[in-house]
Each structure stands twice: as structure tokens, then as C-alpha cells.
Length: 141
Length: 466
Image (cartoon, rainbow over all chains, first blue to last red; front, side):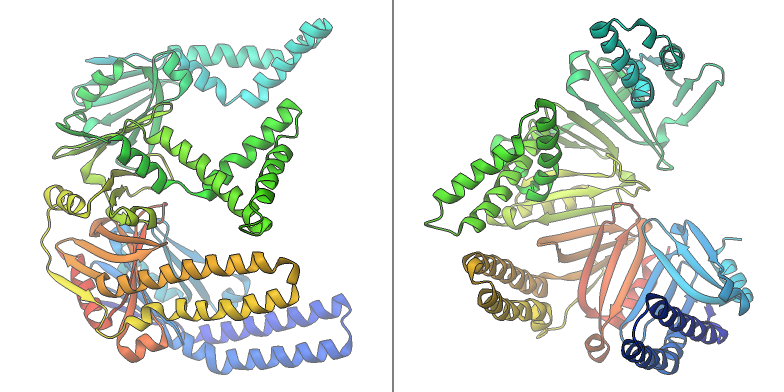
């Protein structure tokens, strides 16, 4: 059995994404010419949401990821409030896609999508070495 | 060596792909030639392209050859670029014959082969060539045929019809017919419905009766369409193959190898439940939504017959079983009860603010309450009968999906994914909701609720062993 965990850098990536999203929402409001009261209300709301996600949700979400590769199948477990576990037999895996975004490449991380027909398992942030281990475990190399 | 004769209609099949770019513009020009005597309109690039397409299609049809030799199927095609496809006949997993009215008039049949790698190829051949093809592919060894009687055919057509499909069929047909005939057919149809609704206004609100009549008409249309598709249905099964033929025009004949079946579902929808009937349907692992993706094999049969079919042809013996714990019935029905509870205050508010439509809202409240009460009944059924049984390389999920009571047998080799979901109540109670997904684009799946999480994990671990 091979165990893979999400990189701790993933937490920084998620936080950076949250801050970027907040900046985008606020600049959108400015571009639309929202008045000061609306801007202040949205600013407060987004800060509360961002703090909730950055301080509470994302660390738990990253920690919740458990990737295990057995001889016959791969199991990926995640979720903070609702726990989800996806189990996919190795012989039915059609492709393994690696996704890189400009922001994720700053943190040297990649997202991975393990695809079977109709279904897929998405892993949001893995380091290069973890991806190598994953591909080795899935026997796609 | 067996050579399968290609029907001349294959030429039109090749031509069909150029219908909008070459054939229709030239047709328009010919009409203008006849009506306005404009000869110069025919002498253009479009005509040259069409002549090329027609000649090319004729040559392409001439050079297409299907030969079966030494257990292999050879498809030779192409004019300048010759291509030869060789497929081992053992690797042809399914063959589907369809006959539409034009093909029937010219004794032609469209044959579709499905290969082991999910690829499909279609050709139009002579009707009398099918027997030769079947014997060469050893797909026709199905000794026990059963023909569907009139009552069962009607019940099957009624059970598989839906108002949504009827609306999808009717809307473009009415629209196009109106445009072609230059008559307001849609308006006339709605006018008739409106008159009927006014006549029924003493019994039911006009708006409610208009909605009901539209849905009823759509359902009737879907029913008639399904009746044409399912009439004269014959099914048969041998040790290796399954045979299904149904419909008048179009008539469809499906010959499929058992080895490729991904799951078999024994299911009963609300209408079949009224008559205590079930249907057996199978799905094939597929990478596209094709006509070979699955079919109903036993329509409207008693549960005993369906079980007998499973037992005699897909033999298995139970090993382990997971069921929802005793006393958890409320968990199956809580959302439905909550929704029923919500309907009354919402209706009250709607009646208060839109008093002109009060009768219509009351009608909707009655309909939704009836649907939700049926869902509560199904929730109890799911609590009593819902289970996940593990067999050697197989998995049987007993559950409810889309108002259907179902028992789905999955072959572990064709399972694409198992999804386990645990809500906070499940985490506290040590239970989970398990969804089994078939390796198919059709998205066949079954969900079993509130089974023991630890045991489910343990049994899943052994599912793909050996």
C-alpha cells in the first residue's frame, strides 16, 4: 500500500487563491461603481468569509485528504463537514491528467485528475515527487 | 469465405454527410431552373462540388467490401486511400440491426458492429444477408425465444413513456409542421386545449386543467411512439448471447454477447408497481451513449420470473450483506416529511399574495403532496429492502432511484467507481451512503443508504481480489 498526503504548500496556495478571489470581487465592485456603503458591507463580508476559509476550513480540508493506493484500487478520502471517499479500481483508469496553473506553479504544485469513464477523482495540490509516486502506484508510467 | 452484399442505399448514407453543404443548395438551384428558367444558376462551383461528391460516393460504395474469412471480419474500403480493417469475429461483442421505413421499402438493413474496444461501425446491407452474417459471427444461437403479448406490450410502452419525452417530440414537430404548412397549428392546438379546460372549469381550475391536458397529450404521444418501438417484441437468451427484437418501423434487432454486460437491473416504476410487475434491463460498459449501450430484456414480468432469470442465467451465491440498522426508518423519510411540512405554509403564502390563482396553487399542493407521500412510501421500502450484497466478483445493490424500486447486479470488473459519503449524522452513527457507478457514459449507478461504514470498507477491500 502506498500513502500520499497533500503538500503543506497547498495550504498557502489555497490561501493565495482566497485572497485573489477577494481582490477580484472588490475590484469588480469598484469597476461597477458601487457606493461606499455597499463596498464596505461586501468588504466586511468577504473578509469574514476569507478568514473562515483561511484559518478554519482550508487547514482542515488539506489535512482531511488521505490518498491510498492498494494493489487493486486507489482510495481518496476528503471533506471537512461531509466526508467523501472515492474508490476506483486501477484496471479501469483511463487517464491521469496533471493540471498546472500560474499560481500553482509559483508553489511548485500540480492538481491531478484520475479519470475513468464518466467518473474522476480530483486531487487539488500535489508536489512533483508525490505525483511521481502516484503515477508509479497507478502503474501509468 | 462469406461476402456480405452492400445495399445501394449505402451510397445515400455517404451522401447524407454532404446534405446541407451540397445537396440542398443544388436542389434549390434546380427548383429555380424549373420555375424561372435560370440555366446559369446551375453552372457554378456548388454544382461541380455536388457532381464530385456524387461520383466519389458512388465509387466509395462500389469499393466497400465486407468479407468474413477464417473467423475474421474484413472491411475493405476507400478509393485512393485503401483501408482494410480486420477484426476477430470473437471480438465483435454486439450487432444491432435497424430498419427504418425507407430501408424497409428497399429490403435494406442498417447493421452496426460493436468491437471489444467500444468502437462502432455501421453499414447498410441487403435484408437477406443478415442470416448469413449472424451464422458467420455465431451470434444467432438463441434457442428460447419468448414473444411479448399485447397486454404486456401496452404495459411496457406505458411504463417507459413520459410526458417530458412527449414534449420534446411534440414541440419541434408542431413548430415545423406549422412553418411548412403556413398554418398556426400550435395556436389551434392550444385553443382546443383551452376550450376543453373551460368545459372542465366546474371540476378543476382552468389553469390546472390546461397544464394537466398538455402533460397528458405529451404522455400520449410518447406512449404511441413507444408502442411503435416495442410492438412485436421478441427476446431470447442462450449461454453466450442475448437477442432482442422490437418495433415495426423502425424495427430494431440487437444481438449481444453476455460477456460484455456491465450490470443487470431488475426494476419497477410506479406504473409497473400498480400491476405488481418488474422489468429486467441490462447496461453495457460504453464510452458513448450509443444504441448498443443497453436495453430492456424482460419487460413487465412478475418478480419471481425476473429473479428466476437472474438465477438461471447469471448464477451467483450470496457471501456478505450490508443493510441499514434497525430503527433507522426515519432517516430514510425525514427530508420528504420536511418537504410535505413545507408545502402547506408555502401554498398558504402563495394563495394569500396571488389570490387569483388560488385554485391552481391548491391543485399543485395536492399533486406535490401526493408525490411526496409516494416518496415516503418508497423510503420505507428502501429501509426494509435496501441492501448491498457482495458476491464473488459481483455486487448487488437493492435500493430506490427516481421513484423506481431497483435491484442492480454489477460486475466488479465493470465498476468505474465506488463513492462513500458520510454526513455528520452518519459519522456519529458509523454509517455511510455508498454509490456504485458503472463504467459507462450512460451513468448507470445505484445508491445504498445508511450501511455500516467499517464493514463496507472491509468488504470493498476484498471485491477486486482474485
